[in-house]
Length: 226
Image (spheres, rainbow, N blue to C red):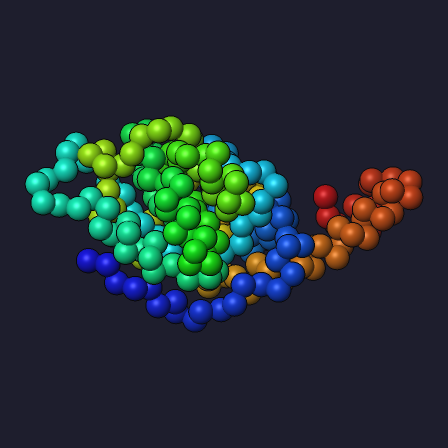
């Protein structure tokens, strides 16, 4: 049964998140010992120019071979999308299925109307031209015209899932850009962001000195970032 999600702490999104990028956050996650937080390289953005920074709302899909009589296979999917809030991102975990395209233009339109941030799925997406026109960040495992009806459906919402090879819990911070997508667990978020913003400052100094002609080895010895 669908239960509206109540975050544990409901922290705001980080200020100046537009300064962040996935390579930086991946390094920060590594620095705190979380080395498996980047979704596999097959998870790609529909639009490389859009960034995603949002908190996870999760849907767990299971493959299906038919739709039982009288059953609405979209029931949990609809309830979850209708409950999205600003700052939420729908995370649809399909277990790497090659039979399910759970995301398309109608769910994207509903998501935009709710003011939510977008979608991440290791399943397929469709209606890609319409979604690109909406400027909605969507990260996907492939593009195909396959409806989920009769192929798969959500069996649980707002539960921990594995998506793109990474465990995602409700409320975790997801960040994506043209290089990929990382998942920052809530319990490590403050430390990861602290490390990331410190590294931004060091990288700015490094870039300035490299542009001035300082040797890379000297810049690295001084700031310790690469």
